Image 1 (cartoon, rainbow, N blue to C red):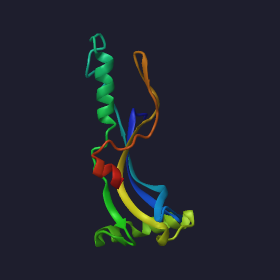
Image 2: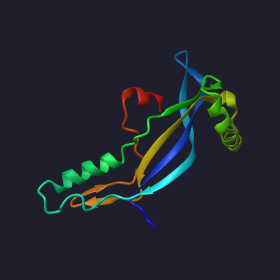
Image 3: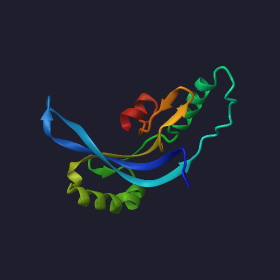
Length: 147
């Protein structure tokens, strides 16, 4: 059965750029490991479509539903896991991903567990179309810099 949007829990692996830029090693790319995915639906009857500000209310409602609730969790940084539990739980899974991508643990800057929410397909609300895209977490500046 179809859905309106997805909520994914992922491990985001940030890789180190081997080239130095201005004397600092800089992150240039990342990979993701999908841990779980949920299908979700919008409540299309939350507002009456004849209301004057229906479009505005629905856009705000959808944006709210697409805003991740989970704050990113740092599980690996500077060559080690942040807790032994994370190492036990995720090391094998991450090793498989590194092998697939032909990377080494030394290529990894950090690994963060986070939530990503995105639309299944574009949604039309009166004259506005919300497009299908993975949205960045709308969190505090600290959380965004971690993610």
